[in-house]
Length: 441
Image 1 (cartoon, one colour):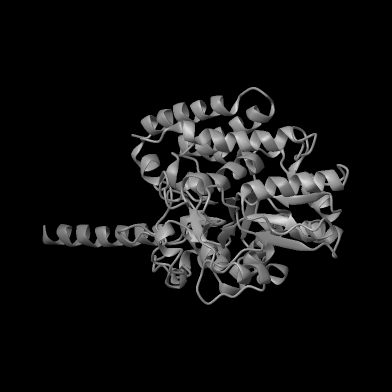
Image 2 (cartoon, helix red, strand yellow; image 1 turned 135 degrees about the vertical axis):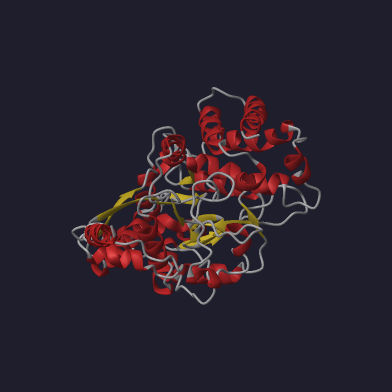
């Protein structure tokens, strides 16, 4: 009996060794999980060296070609260090929000994606916590509360910071003797002067309904001037849900006035966003209601074109110009992605100071991290000139529910197309805000 018991034990030990040996030898295709120490993770190094090929999908809101090129080049540099990691880049432009909404509904998010100002409110349930990454310690004081919650979770890596206003063609303003406008009425008057004296050869204000974000951006900028930045403002009413949307109508009316006066392109409904660099380089555009991300493409066409940046003019009497700010482009990791550790490692690679510096310089925007001083070249004098101008968060990110950007784009086009009056558009805003808030309860 004792002999049988001894044989049984021996058999069990041999079987255990065989099973253990099999489970630890998987042909090199399934590495053991690496400990997540939050630094440049070991998992990424393993996937890049053990023969496993990884393709990460990266979605970004970046529209301008120059910034896209730099981001792809940084990705290529990562792939040189990790030859088995490749990238599939997607830049959906105007369709970005709709594409990401469908992916959220399907619970099939990109490995890495841009949260475009909505890292906590819209994407909070989909992003991995990045608080254990080394770069977090370098977040600027202004950026930290935007991408971090009260519990310390870090939702996204801000690749750059926004200090957005209006980009203008300095050659055009100099030619027609125009000082930088400080109020919206002065801006419209400048547009009329340019149109008249150029005999219609210069488009005062560039908008493109085919890229309706250029229309919505006007409203997002000037909503702050109309409703928030003045001493007596509507901030509390907007947050409490008691805002009278008739107070929105003057902004829509100004937008329609600009169109009726021919201060936009005659083919605003069909002109393409991609036409802007060429027109700007040729001196055919005076003002663009956006950051200068498109300027590098214009400079390739005409290296001599002079560019200026100005804050958003005031609307309310007694108020002063402002900038809109926050994070510009970001990178978050999908928390349920099968390549999560590699994704976090890629984000850490992009967070290297030299890479963030390149992205800031390509996009013409300040850095979001301490210790990074990008050479903004032609923009430096303007950021220095306006260093004391107040910076407010983007209006829609604070005062409108998620989903309203689409409404802003649609109603703007409908105003230009004559489908909505300014008064009608205010009622659409009221209805859509109520609908979207009810959905999000």
